[in-house]
Amino acid sequence: MQTFGERMIGKLIRSIERSEPGFGISVLFSDGTGLTVYTEVSLRMSDKAGESYIERVTSTDQRITLHLGGDDFVAISIDRQKHDAVELFVYQDTDGTFVVEN
Image (cartoon, rainbow, N blue to C red; front, side, top):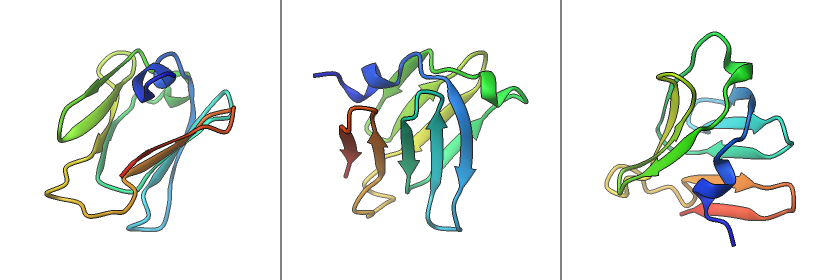
């Protein structure tokens, strides 16, 4: 079974969509998979967001960071002291697998 980080590496970002305030963002990948984040997220992307793919993933007790090319990244807060969300993020793979951090 692959870890979340292993599933993310190499994915090409198709788009990032912002939901209503307080309802997070969705990161859509070119292979049809997606990631919805319900907590604090930091994002740094160049103008060529459609050409960004995930090179590596790092994880700490406070955040999971998807590192893109150059200095670009998507950092997802998983700090339990700051967030009491039932689901911090949900990833749906093409085979129907869900990875939920809660």
